[in-house]
Length: 316
Image 1 (spheres, rainbow, N blue to C red):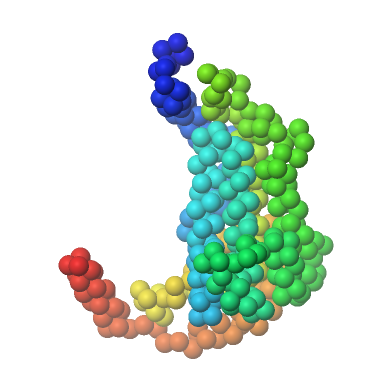
Image 2 (cartoon, rainbow, N blue to C red):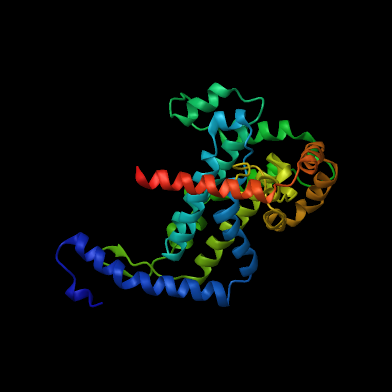
C-alpha cells in the first residue's frame, strides 16, 4: 500500500489501510501460535471447550432454566470467541474487554441459579428491568463461596480469591491502571498513517493476551465445575436417551476429561476429592445406572419423528 495514494475520504482511507495490514497480522498470529506459543496444546483445549462445551455447562433443572435459561453461558461463548478474533487482528487490548465480560457472565449465571437467589431478581436481570444491573462481581463470588464451603477444604488457595485476583488484573488493563497497562504497552502501534494506528503483530503483546485468554478459560472451567460438579463425570446420554438427551448440564466422557484437563493444577486435588465424595454426583450416577438403555426400535422411532418434524418445518 502506498500511503500517498490513499483516498481523500477519511473512512475510505481507513478501509484501505486496514485491508492492506490485517492479512499480514492474521498470518503472523497464526504462525506464532502454531510454531512458537509455548502452551499450544492447552490453548487448543481451551478453544475447543469454549466452542463445544461451555454452553452445555448449566444444569437443565426447570427452576434454573426459568431464571436465566442458558443465556449467560452462551453469551460468554460469544465473548471468548470475540477475544480470539481481536487478538488475530492485533487489537490486543480489546481482548481484555471480552475476557472481563465472559468472566462476569459465567459468575453472574452461576449466582442467579443458586437456590438462595430469588427467581424474580434473575428474571429482572434477564429482561433488563433490574434497578441494580448485573450483580457486583465480588458480591456474586462471595455468594458462590458461601454456597460451596466444602470446596475450601484441603486447598492452599480459595478458588474465589484466585478468580477475583485474575478479574482485578484484567480490570487494571481495561481501566489503564498506570503505564504498564497503557495502550502502548498492551497493544503497541509503531506505524501511524493519517493519524490512524496501523494494526500489527506484536509477539510479546500477542503472547500476553493469549495467556490471559487461557487463564480466563481455565478459571471459567473451574467455576462451572464447582457450580455443577456432575460435569466432572462423563455420561453417555445417547445410550439412554438416543438423540433426545437433556439439553444441558451433562458432559460426555470426552467432554468431562477436557474439562478436568483445563482445571488449574493447584485445584486438581480439590477436583479429585469432589469426584470421589460429592453426594450429588453419586446420586446422579445411581439415577443414570438405573435407566434402561434405549432400544433400537425406540431410536428408530426418534429418527422418524425427527424426519417428520423437518419435513413440516421446511413446508412452513
